[in-house]
Amino acid sequence: MEEFGVPLLSITQSARFLNDATVDMKLNIKSKKIEYDKQNELLSWSFSNAKVVANSFGEIKVDKEPRSRTKRIDPVDACIDAHVAYMKLKEEDSIDYDKEMSNYLQMMNWGGNQK
Image (cartoon, rainbow, N blue to C red):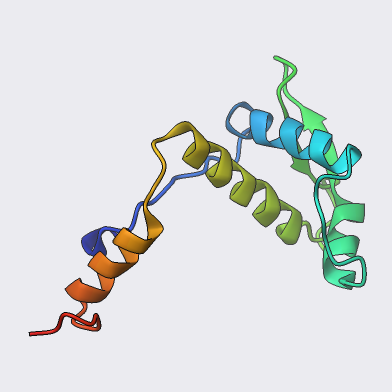
């Protein structure tokens, strides 16, 4: 992906790294700023399996019960990871998606300006 110039973000699954996004996601859910499909059983089930845990510094992240092998929280983790990416993107200069897509299509010889 890096060879194609795709910006990559490494997301460490630690409370220190995930704290800000977890807190922000929690506040957005409580204030009903997050919309989701309430009929999505997998998402609802995974959120019901998730719990918030804190490290010794009070930083939080989402986790599951230690011996809950079958109680998956992968969709919740994906939501938090996407929120991390969103927050990091807001911190950086805004990206011109049309320009980036045009550059990518041109690089792949799929764009309108093929030679």
